[in-house]
Length: 255
Ligand code: PEP
Image (cartoon, rainbow, N blue to C red; front, side, top):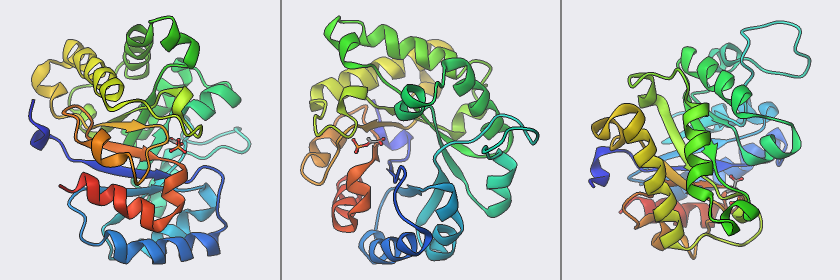
């Protein structure tokens, strides 16, 4: 296992937080703290904050992402945003399949797959979220759950397209709860996902895919989680809104 085969990526998921003015202020605070990062740094922000984030990050090492994208190029989809709308602004990354979208907004593996396909067709880098709910972990079916999600969500994605896919393993029971997977649990399930990718694309390709852990990663637990062989980065919710904490996580991934 060679972590050098894939970039470490720390991405913030701001969820439904911050006005454009607040986004600018947060990024201005964050910029000097992550300027020396030796990993990729991304902030995924609400649609209305994208322009402010793009302006504030210009010339810095911070990239900007959206938190979702629709699968159609255009049309009668009130309230939705297309991949072309995002790329036309200069937005490079997008989170797809976050558990909050699956739980509260009825997203299925079929719609997640359509969104993945549309984002890749537009040349975006996808952060694809998969993960089990608490009952699934307690019943011992975590491996099957993440395997099925990974296969369905990536249906039709070629090995070449996979170069623009980051997988975020996010146990749903750990998101926003303060409960974190142990480093051993994170490592085990990220390893399962890599094995599933190896089955789909071959081990050489699977070894180049960045797999993040997400779920209450914070300034205190990041170093140990990120030191696991199959944990190549983090998708960070709450702690990404605190510049010093986010910078500590970025530093932990930069070693
Ligand atoms: C997330 O929103 O993807 C997330 C991991 O949130 P938190 O870090 O707050 O658990």
